[in-house]
Length: 284
Image (cartoon, rainbow, N blue to C red; front, side, top):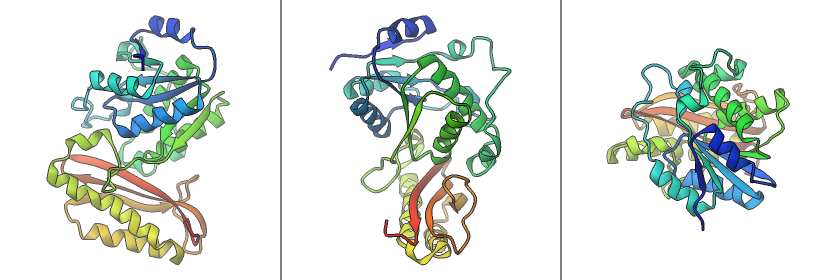
């Protein structure tokens, strides 16, 4: 497998991008690549002629007091994963390349969907995320863009942006990749101590417990998931919700159909999120 072309400037990227004639997929990352990112690249590789990976730690997504300064920066190993999985081109710009005039005066607004759940805990996060995704989609010009289901609200908002703004790109969601014990893969997992990691397992265990109760209705799902979390006092739960996967509104007790069970909690100094799609009153 040949090493991908690595571009750091817009000119370098434009030159390399012009040589890709066919369907082009993009996998957008903030670096610190892991098996979840590798899965996205593999999915993209299987369905497209070319794969572009962007590696950009977007400062607009981090509020004051969040972990931008300590976010892991592992470009060398990131490029090794890109090569291993068959990426053709990597765009790894610095902030001044993406934002040549400083912070943008015009930004994408996530709207009401960006103010709940993660948006309530991290005001402005989704505006910053959508702004950079919009910019990178315009720069890359892909046929398809691949994102993980673990960041379900992010995926929903990107799909909504592409549809609402008539963007000529197909947004593809890929199921969450987990460790053997159920922990959802995340770049932030590197912050977890061995003990924190054991505590963090309560998130995926709560989701599985909720899923097991899906045929008994929403109240049973919420109750089963909550029961797991209350027995782990070292996980400081931000939210545990069972919502409509399109509107993110809490589903009522009589609800039957597709729903999203989502959880966010702080373990040690690290904030983690996880979710699972399920069918209430169904067999899945």
